[in-house]
Image 1 (cartoon, rainbow, N blue to C red):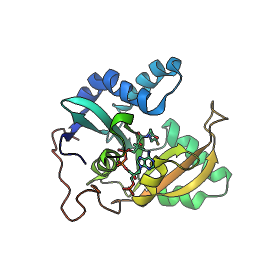
Image 2: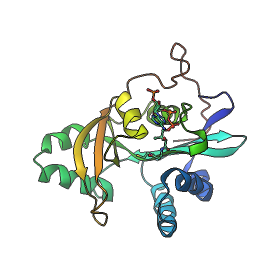
Image 3: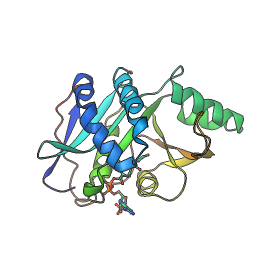
Length: 204
Ligand SMILES: CC(C)(COP(=O)(O)OP(=O)(O)OC[C@H]1O[C@@H](n2cnc3c(N)ncnc32)[C@H](O)[C@@H]1OP(=O)(O)O)[C@@H](O)C(=O)NCCC(=O)NCCS
């Protein structure tokens, strides 16, 4: 990761405060229909209250250029329940037992297009998962080849469900991916032989 980029953990109140700025990164990275952004902001704000919430922000000159967040997944949460049912419907209950009994649910990982392909996404992902008590990490990503999928696979994620449609978005197939924790591979592709460094400023 570039030397002028700093990773910082934001405790839930600081994350909630930062949602408008993080939403700009999200909008640039994902290019969603603008009408979806208020709903996304509301979801992000509500996730900050979930158990085990952790967020990590990448800053250049104090400006967010990337962010990632996750929380402890459990029954009763929308994503957890929908994916559990999807796996069971396809006869993959063993994946439910293996990956969804004690998961870190990774909700968002985004880097602004101007800052992509410099190691920030990889550093964010490793920082998010570092030292977590959960056994596994789980996430969903768009089906098909992408930088995101390449990144996740290189960290040990495997596809447990392909071409999965979430309720309300039948035309957007997703892959559900899962990994054992700790993640594999280096957290910083530009300094593979050095230990990972990042300032830890928030609380869990
Ligand atoms: C996915 C994403 C977070 C990765 O962040 P990043 O900072 O660009 O990624 P990194 O620089 O750490 O690179 C991670 C890997 O992806 C690869 N990669 C990054 N950008 C790429 C691109 N445009 N094309 C192909 N590969 C790319 C890198 O080569 C790297 O692999 P390597 O270490 O084997 O070389 C970022 O591309 C992004 O925000 N994409 C749009 C939003 C998105 O898809 N988010 C994920 C939703 S699940």
